[in-house]
Every structure is written in C-alpha cells, then in structure tokens.
Image 1 (tube, rainbow, N blue to C red):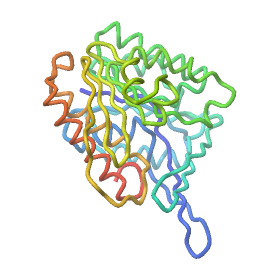
Image 2 (cartoon, rainbow, N blue to C red):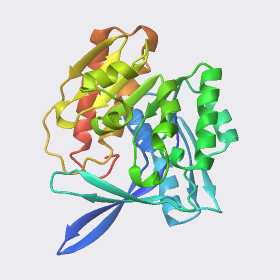
Image 3 (cartoon, helix red, strand yellow):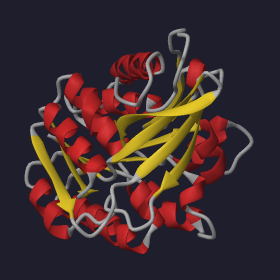
Length: 294
C-alpha cells in the first residue's frame, strides 16, 4: 500500500465574476491530492493528516471519507485551525498561492499516527509543507528515519512554496529529504533552486544516485526522468488549461500508482517511459478543470 502523510487543506480559488473576485472552496494539500489520484488509478492507498475542529475541517473530513481510501487517519484537532491556501489564477491557468497557516493543524501529525500507518505501507509519500516549521520537521525526520529502518520506499515531491519559508535556510532544510528519497519529484523551477549546473540534464546528473528515480515536470513539454544513470525526456499531450493547481500532484499520484506494481530497483527503462508518459497525461488532464483533485 502507498501511504501519504502530510498536509490536507482547503484551496480557496479566486475567480473574477462581474468585476469581483469570488473564492470557491476545494479540497487540497499536495499529499492528499496525490492520495486521491492514486485511489482513482486503482492502487491501494492511505492518507494520514490533521485538520482543525472548524467548518473547513468538517468539510475536508467528509470529503476524505468519500474517497474510500484503503486506510484513513485524519485527526480533528481542537487546538488548531484548518490550513487554507488562497489561489489566484491568471489567463493561462497558472496559479499563485498565499497560505493562511498560523496556529494550523496540518503539520502536527504525531509519531503514533506515523507508527500505525507504517504497519501497512510499502511506499511512503512525505508532504513537504511540514518542513516549514520546527514541529513539522520533527515529524518529517521521524517519518524518514522509520521508513529507512523498516525498508519502505520514500517518495518526496519538493513542492516548494516560498512564502512558507521566509527567513529560513530552505536549501539546507530540504537537502536531507532530497538525499534520502527513493522517488523524487521536482518542477523545472525547483530543480533550478536545488541543483547546480548549466542544463537540466547536468543538474539531474548531480542529484542522481543508482536506483533513485527522479522526475522533473516541464509543463506542456512533458517531463524528464533520471534512473540508473539514464536520463530521458517523455512528451505529454496538448490541452487547454484552466487551472494548473494540482497538476504535479496528479502526475506524482499516477506515477506512484504504476510504480507500486514493479520492483523499483530493477525497472526496465522501456516500462519506466510508459509509466512516465501515463503520468504526463494524468497531469495534463488535471489542468482542464478547477481544483487540484477533479
């Protein structure tokens, strides 16, 4: 089973109507989006998270129960609020985030929740938003250490959001997780931030280790992969995007749902290319509707 651990939140997506910006409510949070995609793709999946005891938390809990995950552990926390992300979308469908996240519940996942979930996990998907707080980093470090101890495959999407890391040395924070991930995903912009080199291929080469799979999503161009010393570009399909929120999560969810069927340490390149192509299509289709999950 693939267990996704991390942020679940409400995306409030702004649309202009009659000269006013109106915000619509959608379920979101990168690891939760990934879990929803994995379930749609037919693989066994679970989600572990935390919400506040408020209207948004009630909405998210009901939504999560409706996904019929194989494992679900969302704690309703009386002491903290449900995280919100304000999202504005330009005419090309590209989005810009601003988080309402003070005194929030999303990163306060306990070690007990992690221990219980690990019992049924083969792959663990670690959400990155928790890395922006000391409390969250403590949990994330525990997740990584337990994944290594129990020989689980660790999957990590960099999913960097700058406004959550103001005045923090985010490169140092992220470096340990990038180093320890078995499956790693970057956007093109994130690869530029976290790796040095003159080309994308050079940057990938410096990050690559034997038997580590790295994917870099490139929007309409498709994505790059690096695996066992091989680097390649896989094209996507053409779509007309209305909202790119969650496109990377759809890519990652599809990728992981397919990888769960194979030995990650001995994956033929031809099969990997098929899997990445399917993930590209999934990510592209996700941009044709509003919200991260539809």
